[in-house]
Length: 126
Image (cartoon, rainbow, N blue to C red; front, top):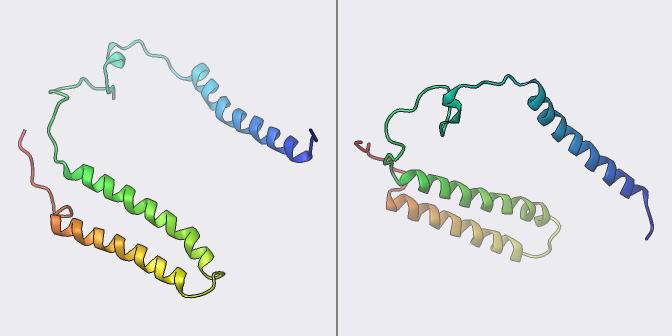
């Protein structure tokens, strides 16, 4: 196996990454203030005593917003490399493919709009 300088650079970057990740963790373990407060052992500790039940009802629209964001975010991430290769491609076919892809995204957006996903959710009484 040939040992190249690129291997040394990779090992150095790996060690530097581990140092940059490990030093703050070790520093926080050594220098962070320690508290023996009983509330620290409670779930979702934020310095105050929890009140009410943790099982509350909330609208499903928040899940729709999150799924829509993920779907369109991934699709836009797909469009960046396609758009960068578009200028070097030959013919009209890549433009048609991108147009079909974007039109499917637009149809999905219209579908969700017709379903009322983007409407303001009604307030749920607890």
